Length: 231
Ligand code: TIU
Image (cartoon, rainbow, N blue to C red; front, side, top):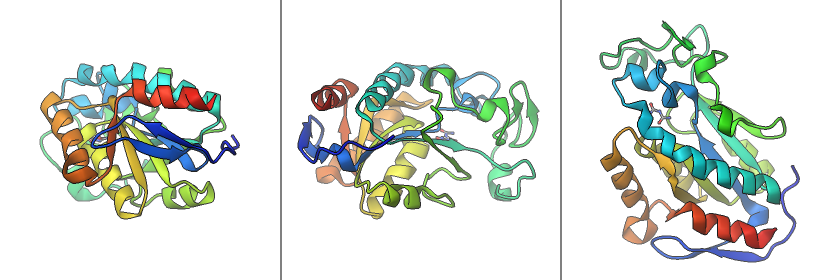
């Protein structure tokens, strides 16, 4: 999984403005494409959500993932979830709301949002390869209580292509964390989804407003076109 060596700048059509990047310092970050969020019987559905809303993000992510593998980009997958003893689950998170099943309760895909259970795993279409990085995170942001900063420094990453679910929760939280740490985030609009289409739209709008206050937003065809230039 050696990153590309070329330092040439590639332009990606994005909002609020086109962005140039160097593939040698770019990684693909796929947020929480887990069965617990996308399939019936998981955490997302226990919260009362229509999980079918998230399926639309899978084909664009699969296309970008295939291109990233082709050009040798580092690929980082994240998974939200907790240890079986819930020692990393804040009681305030477990107690939140009135879900049909709480974090740690047994469900049709195993214990809800617990590491190692079938529901915690990534959907088959986007399953990580053995040489890809998987970051387990207890929170919504991928930097909080994880090794993500160390991984990005190790690979010399400056720019992140970000996609996954949900747009306004874990994607937005991670992009804000990354932005504060100096990373440039290009969020793949059609590679993100929310249980609430209006929150998806607002979540993307917030990122690219004010001259790109948190980052850039691009559609997957624009990202794929730029990746095709690389190889
Ligand atoms: N509920 C919801 O929209 N999202 C989450 O709880 N986690 C993620 O976004 N991954």
